[in-house]
Structures are given as structure tokens and as C-alpha cells.
Image (cartoon, rainbow, N blue to C red; front, top):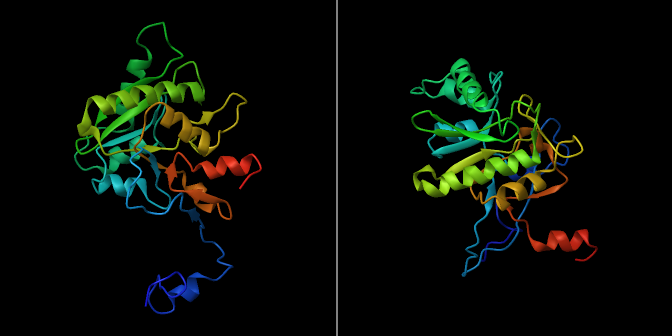
Length: 237
């Protein structure tokens, strides 16, 4: 008998029935949509993988990535993932004070281009962090800053293949290094993905944990999204 969705089991025992209950109070819920069926002739186009439901810090500590891309500022990084990672890595010699001091030193270099992003390197032994330094003149990252930073990041990754595989935060839901669009609002995940992809980035991206509550909105696990999404936005099918 051929296995189908109708007769296949995901869980052992009563797991399938228990996990199909419509009212799962207090549980995060993601509706994951396939953008295409697997094919014998795979599409070789590079994409950003969107790591729904995965834990970035755990994956970094498990040596799944050589490089992390995130934000940093010259004031305080005590709540940022860069400091969390430095604290957890046993061979890292960085802490919040030294991370922030390093950022401050570069932020003060030169009087021109103070509104442009720099990308700083933090060697944490098993992981190299490429950190977009928030310009000192800005209270938040702008979309232009993000594009500038990822143009540099993509070039750094390409010039040193040993930096792959790489992962990035989404820059959404951040506090000290928040991302805002031209209207002062947080942009959509789709726009952030488009900005990174257009700059040449094709590593993995970890959505903010609050996005795990996105259901009933369906989400894709790769970017660019399928053309069918745009057709639906235009009124087609």
C-alpha cells in the first residue's frame, strides 16, 4: 500500500489525535506551506532558508554554523544575541564590555560616513560574528542601513568560503538594535528577506520567536517566495 497523508502517522500512539486538537491554548503555532514539490531535477537557484521553529543559540552551540550575522551598537549590548553567545561559548574571550568597547572604537573612527553601516568581526573561536554596527547618528537601523550592511556581509562571505554555513537574525523584534522603515515602522519579514537576498545573502535566517505565533497565516520555509503569492496579491490564482 502506498503511503499517503491519509494513512501516514506523524507521532507514535495517540500523538496524532492529541496534536490535531483545534484548541491548543498556550502553544505556538506555525502553518508551514511548501513552495514546490520535490523534483528529480532540483532547482539550483540559491535561496535563503527560513528556520521556522529552530533555536538559533542551540544551533550555534552545536557547531551548525561558522558565522553569525547580527547587530551591534556602541552603547550597550547586554541584551543582544552577540553577548548571549559570547557568554555561552566556553572558549570565547568576549563579554558585553569588550563587545561594546570594540564597537565604540570603530564608531568613533573618522568624521565622514558616520551614518553608514560598518561590519565588525568578532572571533569567538568556534563562531565568527559579523556584526552590523548601528550608525552613531541613528537610534535604529534603517532599511538602507540593512542593505549597506548585507552588501558588505555577502562580499565577506564570498571572499572567505570558510565562513559558510552562515546564519542571520531577522533584525525584527529587536530592542537596542531595532529596524525601522521609512515611515518609522517595523518592516515585514518579506521586505527584510528581499533586502538581504538582493544584497547577495543566501544563508539561513532565524525569524523572531514571536513570529512562531503566525498561524493562521501560512509561511514558507524559503525565499524567494513562489510566484503564486504575487499572482494572488494581484487577484489571480
